Length: 280
Ligand code: 7PJ
Image (tube, rainbow, N blue to C red):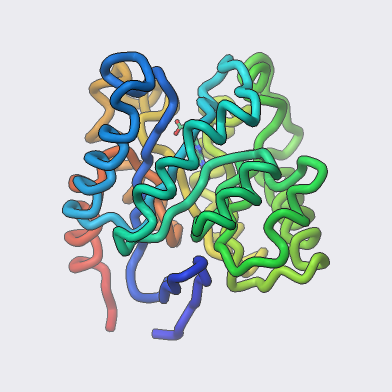
């Protein structure tokens, strides 16, 4: 099997070996059991340590809720949420990804030791390209139509796969024009970000083509999303099995990284999937 390298800050991955699991660590106040900041750091560290025991490859730290309709968070507040978590987790031996659209947060996170920047906005904010250019952190370039506030109002495409592919190509070209090495970049069609269920299904089926056309690894985030709910008829807290099915569908299409809430279960599912498909 050929080597397919992803540079991820202090870490490097051979993506040809097996699909990677990115675990979601939300550090928004609504994700703490006491609804506030008091135990935030403790929860984050416990959550991260559990993910590591469960076999996570990358931890994705998010301080801005991007669920449809969520308000945007001021930069100072996002920094207050995310920075202590980076400092607390950076010596655990696992790459830290920061889920942010804000160039100020990207810069501070990289200085503090973040290994990857995951931008649902595809590095479109003024200053975002410059914020990540001169580092060796991994990058996830995601497609979104609209903003988290309005994206699910009326998703509209003439050709969803063509448009998402063209967008991702343009954003990757912009990064590469700034001097960013290709081996730092992953692409993500952005399931649920300004898409109907039909759009999401079309994109899921196109992962393999998209990856081949752009020559860059795909990261797929389907975990617990409304698409899983629509297909299974299940509420948010009953979407584990559907999400595992989504992760397997994505890797069967060639996705190199899956972004998930349920790390232990996904790692197990992928181990078995891998045992049954590996041809080396
Ligand atoms: C995604 C994300 C995704 C990437 C969120 C949720 C909403 N980043 N951040 N891809 N989704 N790269 O987890 O339901 O699909 S937040």
